[in-house]
Image (cartoon, rainbow, N blue to C red; front, side, top):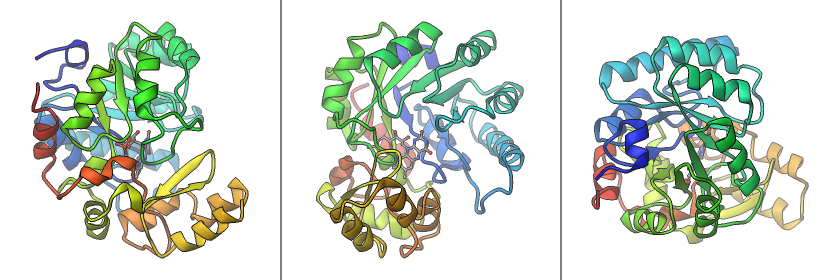
Length: 318
Ligand SMILES: Cc1cc2nc3c(=O)[nH]c(=O)nc-3n(C[C@H](O)[C@H](O)[C@H](O)COP(=O)(O)O)c2cc1C
């Protein structure tokens, strides 16, 4: 069953595996794309060390893209920009054109030059605001974004600055633009997919669920912790720019204590070990040095499975 999303992205199923910072790889992305969804390479995909510079990171990403191309002939996406800093977009965009990448994910940035660049090169753009609003969605549509990802407060990773859940954000954004909207945040099984489609989404964007995929490079301890936990185990704490969640780690009691004392966001961000938090705890399994971030949809995730099984399970109605 095709819809606007499958037709625009040339994929079988309207399901996107979300970028997960250090926790994606060519193997994961190719497995999702081979199964008919759209895999996405996130920042530092497939790496087992942090890069010394942005140029090294760019070169590593090119190599990871080539690995994906060796593993699948199907389309996949790459994260162009991961936050408000767009200073390095052009070298990245040129590399993506050279490598024949068909879909890019643009976080936050609304800049006509960037959307025009990709239109010219016939590359599809997914726009995802950290905090989706009617205004930023309309602006993305005006600039020529192909699809909008509407993310609810249920999501894992850096959560939106406004506390609007997926059930509320999806119809709000779907009613405000004509281009397709994809739902993100809290989707853990086929019931989440059905709900998203009923709310006006034309596809789903799932992150936490793919942390538990067999091919995900996350530490095994992390996968076990997720399948043995529910949303009740998550600690929500303030940090920069808004909030984060963590399952219990050796660091989380300290974060809970600081949160209870109304500690400021900058101090909280340092206490969580900044963005190295995910590298340390989730990639390397050092639970004393970071957090295990997931969305609130994890209660329904019961096993570690190959990505293809996750895709088949979620897309059983299509
Ligand atoms: C551990 C983790 C890391 C994430 N890192 C990124 C990232 O680097 N870039 C990004 O755009 N989104 C990131 N996200 C957000 C996801 O792309 C996606 O929006 C989110 O996972 C959807 O909600 P769900 O986790 O409930 O499925 C991350 C999410 C998680 C759980």
